[in-house]
Image (cartoon, rainbow, N blue to C red; front, side, top):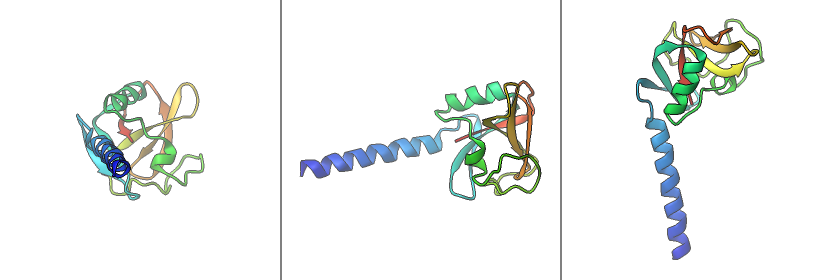
Amino acid sequence: MMKILTILTIAAVAFNIAQAHAESCEGGTLQTGDNGHVYCQSNNTMNWWSAYTWCEAQGRHLATMYEMCPEWDGSTGDGKNCNLNTFSNNVCNWSSTALNTDKAFYVCSKKDISSYGRNTSYQDALCY
């Protein structure tokens, strides 16, 4: 009986942590990707450094390119298969994936992948 209660307690704690993670998006909007992943998208554009910090403040991390676009081949361009098809058009989202020390990749308009300087405040933060 004690073993069953312990298992149920662990399951309840794990569920509460997952639920709190899914709901932590202060100053942003919860977005559900095509694969069911729940992201937190900032309501304001920011540079990469601010996006990284903002996601951590939400108890999350800046999404990787593979979390946004699981079949990403490492290239840039339009027409990529990303999980963000249900998101708003014309929104660009930083990823945590670096191109080099000065630039990081981002996804724009749901499927266009590019890179830009990390100090530029053009993209939203997308946290996972």
